[in-house]
Length: 238
Ligand SMILES: NC(=O)c1ccc[n+]([C@@H]2O[C@H](COP(=O)([O-])OP(=O)(O)OC[C@H]3O[C@@H](n4cnc5c(N)ncnc54)[C@H](OP(=O)(O)O)[C@@H]3O)[C@@H](O)[C@H]2O)c1
Image 1 (tube, rainbow, N blue to C red):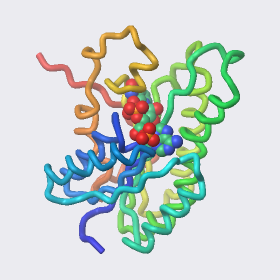
Image 2: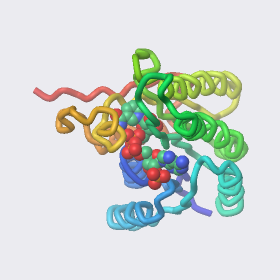
Image 3: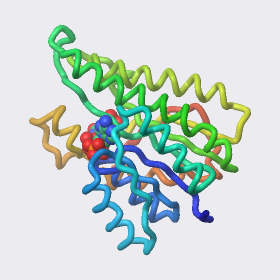
Image 4: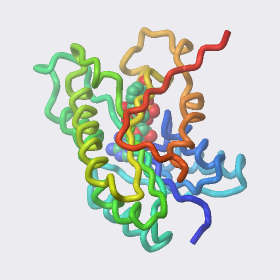
């Protein structure tokens, strides 16, 4: 058992999730880091140890393995007895292109990773968030939901489904101490963005670290906003 707040970050092996895990650790939280790449999680743990002197809990898993999500929740129950924060960040772009060209396998991967896994996470860890005095959850969405456009159909639809589910979840848990919100990071300098827009000058985009620096307040007990959709905007410097 620890006095630190315990925050689960999905997709912590790279990009926004990795930077978020590091930033949340620096803010004094104990991080449960998940992703498929165990090697990348170990490297994250090294960086967290160097920065904070504390280690993270690493749980390599494939979020498409829904039984593994249930096992994760059971492990958290046994080890910590609660969960104070959940950052539902893991996601895949899938295939960008005309709907008639998307393979069923690519569709299923995007749906299961971006939507189904987040439902299974809620189903599995909601009781743990209730055991916290101030459970906080933040789910990462995309600007393509309010601005749908050609060739982004599957990715956009999975994120739209996520947004609708989270709005319903927020309504369901209104009277509990849990607060849940959505976070739209905008375009960020990650592998996913490079895959989506290979011709773009990546140096014009905010880094994952810049985005992550804004995230710790969403997980603090003092943060009481609920059922909202927050958008990261890079602060312009003169
Ligand atoms: N970058 C942007 O411009 C942008 C814009 C809007 C929204 N977003 C959203 O921000 C979130 C993070 O994106 P990113 O740009 O940081 O992407 P990224 O660099 O590609 O990282 C994606 C993360 O998700 C994990 N992941 C993917 N499939 C998984 C699976 N089946 N099981 C477990 N983990 C899985 C990956 O870990 P492993 O590969 O090790 O499993 C990785 O840690 C996503 O939800 C994305 O949709 C990004």
